[in-house]
Length: 286
Image 1 (cartoon, rainbow, N blue to C red):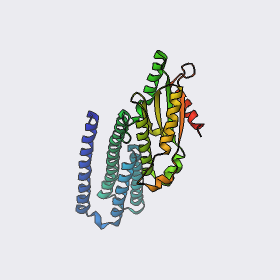
Image 2 (image 1 turned 90 degrees about the vertical axis):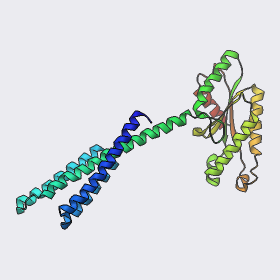
Image 3 (image 1 turned 30 degrees about the horizontal axis):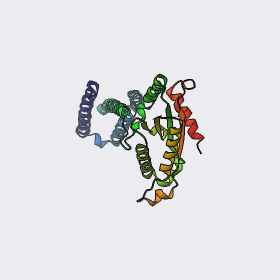
Image 4 (image 1 turned 180 degrees about the vertical axis):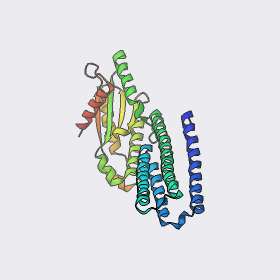
């Protein structure tokens, strides 16, 4: 945990203790001052709770606005009673004018600290996910390194004139398959396809699962005939996958779309452009 996180955690602990003490103080004051004898005070306890909720789920600014509206309304009401009916302003009026804003702003500050640390934790989780190189479900490389390595292979082609191909593999009618089978069975299909790809390709070929795009990305060192062979072989292997213990999946005719594009330095200027060309070829695969 960073120093900033530690400071925020300490502040949360302190404000939590303070809020607990404030609630006990409110209970004690409510009893000792005999506030339970006036039904109006029960309503004001409700106003305290509303202010606390408003403060916690919004911001300090919203809490201040709520407090200003409350003080103006409550003070105006008692000033009116004092002028029109001669009712004196009692001690409990000042008590509630302090209590409601105090609870509102304290909870607003508390809520702000909670949101701050939640946001930091969310950012840390996102950063950690981006550092994960291997997809834990399939064992394939994750999309985080895909474009960097694709560019590296493009440089290999330019320097050593070794044929580099980009292949994209996507489950045909994937949305319909998910609707029919559900997410868990769909994930099982993805894992089986990953196993088929792993068993077919060599170690020097790079195999990725691009979860954001719902497809597999393969960087191949091959020639024209080799690329076509791998394309046909992948289709054949996936079409013949047999889920022996799951009749529901076997009833679905599992097919994939495959896009295959060779790298040409005079036609492709960036990894993203290379990817889009392969994606376009995939769309024409029927």
